[in-house]
Image 1: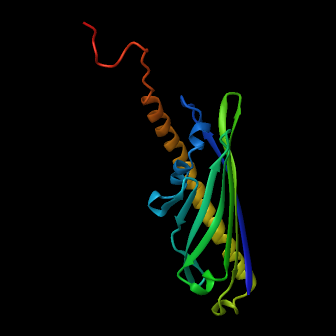
Image 2: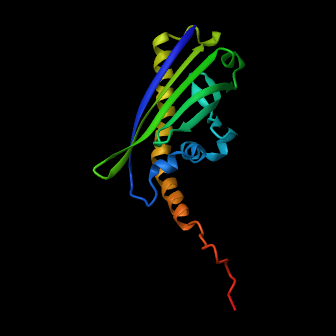
Image 3: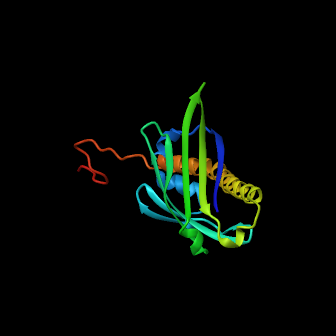
Length: 195
């Protein structure tokens, strides 16, 4: 029995004024992923591809643990996009062989009257063949449970993003301001006095 689930969540995050525009911060996918997910659950596969190990999820009588490979990249304006490029379900091999996940997201800065806000959206789709143990479960119960589970996953990600992205941006902006480049005139070198 093939079941399909879907959830979507919008994001709106006011950005505090900092000496460095948030667009520069958003062009660093690794920092953004660490704001989205507990860093202990992330493996870096390449500069723009990450493996996210999710917490175990409970679906009716099943417990599964998805691992999602996600590509995250940004354009010159600071618009961040993410897309799942692979997924593995640990815990139930039957489901792992009959499971597909599609996660697409976007986060972009918008400035109006001198104030910047991050707007975004994430869409999560899952299709899975239910194991025989659930074939007698009424489809409306399976659909409602699956959609609620996906909504819960996206809501958790949204809460973490809202809490952590601005804090990490502030820390990053502070670090960036503390490390100005050193410039020397052509005839001077540091710590050398002329006699």
